[in-house]
Length: 124
Image (tube, rainbow, N blue to C red):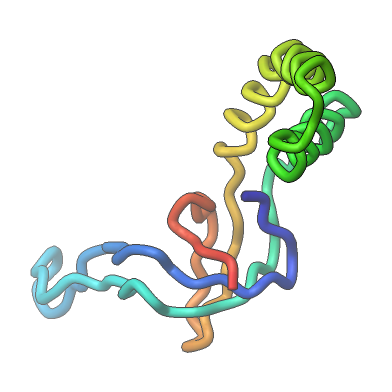
């Protein structure tokens, strides 16, 4: 999943943000966290990777295979499978790097969470 600016998202799991301190220096009085289900808007995507021609070609062929592979003649299906196998390493490398992207999200309650790993967000 690649998120983009302006996209609405929902937090998929609880996030512990930090300790709340009051009174004596270092006296912990609670824990601040964001609960799963809170919604917000992506303000910025950091480290966004452009898709190469091979990545776009893999996505196109994979969709073709998933949608119509069962109706293709065996020779065509085999050729498509071979083409996908050649592009699979490029796709895997792109997907692994894409997982490192972080985003800045402004939650509807006004809080801002920067450097958020996109794996904890669900697009709406």
